[in-house]
Length: 463
Ligand SMILES: *Cc1c(COP(=O)(O)O)cnc(C)c1O
Image 1 (cartoon, rainbow, N blue to C red):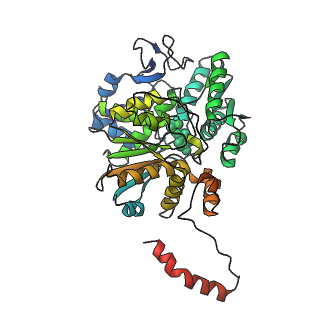
Image 2 (cartoon, rainbow, N blue to C red):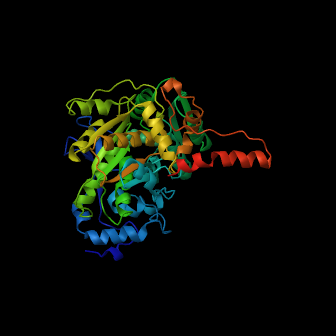
């Protein structure tokens, strides 16, 4: 067996991965085949790895290899996704990797927020600190790299297509532009923010606004990619995305000297991210990188909560719903593609599903912001779920908790400005942490006495 230090940072390694049906073990396809569903039963596909090959190297050597590459300059291995290439996507040749230095996002020690909640070991994994401002980059790099590889072998892929609630389109457009592959994005008109809308435009994607919701866009993207073979589908139904996304599990463990938290809380919409997180932990355990599994929590907006409803029924049935308008617009999804993957993960991880009202998610974001975060509404959903589970004593004071922040707050400026302006009544939000700017005369005396009068209040706020 090669030593870790001898694994060359190139492709000549014996690691293998393929698509496999979730239900039919005999249905295997190459990762460079254009296929999104099982050809026998129509079920979802997953990426399977040759685990025997991965297990042949000792865990200490894997850890040392991953640590040695982490956030260094040897392209593409400094990317936290590609630094784990053997367990992510070994088939892609290095020259076909389309990387914008993904991962390596901050683990924010939420010390003050944790103290306020009575959970001393609270962390926020800032996945929105990334190229396009959301965690979608860490999956998209894998998908677009495979497409580049497909094209390099002579196959035609005239365009990649996705439906999006905003962030997927930004990631696909950026990676497509970096690779020089055309991109088509389908967005629900009026349901994405201006900041999200301008990203695919700026990156030159063909940007379509449709008078429907995300679920409607998804149906059309599926139809396009099924009927006109040449559109490569970039939604998370395509399990290549999940292979990149699973590295957030590895990365958060790596960032804490390879120890596993007790709980991870993640907002869920299409439910790809929770599925990926679960897969990452299970594969790490199989490779011996970790011994225990965390418990997982999916947080849903109450206005789009089909998984929560299913959880209340013990996962006996899953009913898609028509999602209602929510401030957490990226998870306004009533028919999540990966529901089956997610339920399987939650059953394995003794998982919990919680939900948050508009008022709860907005207040949770604002409360967290006062301790140094700048939480997007989806992160607000996860934080609100955390607050509830602490209050219910499901999460205990000594537990180590990681909240996954899925996007940068700056992608949702209207959410912040309207909250602090007290302008979210239509969502039933009563802003208890509202902050207001003060208009003061531009003279020393006026400024000095104003500040003095407010100093006690300001100091009280930061204890
Ligand atoms: C995509 C997205 C989610 C939901 O992730 P799923 O994999 O669809 O469950 C949550 N938050 C943000 C900001 C997103 O962009």
